[in-house]
Image (cartoon, rainbow, N blue to C red; front, side, top):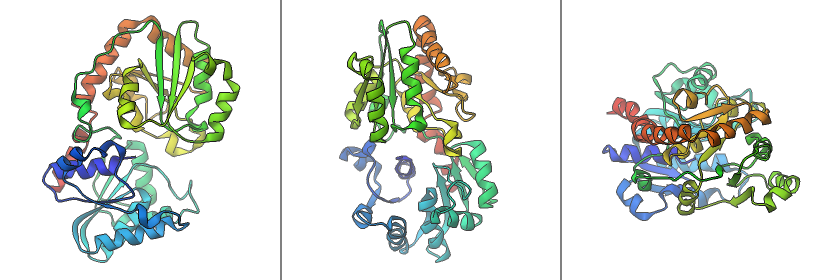
Length: 356
């Protein structure tokens, strides 16, 4: 996820001198003009870790070598980034240690992960913690043992790295209902149940799957539902670059974000960035009824469903198809909330204010 670079860009916009040390520049920022505007010093680590079984330790060493020249603040993203950030603080190379956690991997779920174990040991030395979800943050506090200030920053897209999101975006309603799933292709995303929900609809509907993941799982879907792929009721667009992805959002009415609770707490308490990307392009969402996602109904930007209940999934699509007034109202609310609340600059502001 590109949130680490979003944070680097937000800090740079506020006048901080920022060095971004990572494997690559996120595709969101691949445009050189965007990079020039953001003014973040880039140090890619990919050449150092490619084709090695020791990715974490080599990555940590590279981060340490960069960081030893000294920084006022070092921000470690997820468990893998937090460990070298901690060692920099212990070495006196930074005054503040910030942990920015996008994934939830505790020792209970990942008992053999060295990065997770070390994060649990070193967490109490943090100066600030950032997380994406309130309940998950309380779990993290219990196993990391920190008592420092903490902030919630949802996985939202920024303005500064995506200037196309600032432009007015209008959609005309179609006769059919065009549904988009964009993201990881895997069983944990309940895509089989999603396809079954589309097939069960008794009105014109089409589903597009976009992204990458498990080739075996994708082949299984295409084999099981071959007639529907051939009839273009379901289609697979593959992995798309940013420019094409923008067009794809504009060709659909709804976005889908399903996460099964059978695949651990990281799924159960997730707040996925795809949900807010849909939001930024006026796409209401149908998402799983996880506790961390029920806010979409409170905000009036989508519906939640039990992902193991196919009639419930198809019923949500039917509501959008039959009540076009609701669909239009939610589209308007999506754009409004993205501009006012669910953009990265707004979400990160309390943290930056504390640093200043």
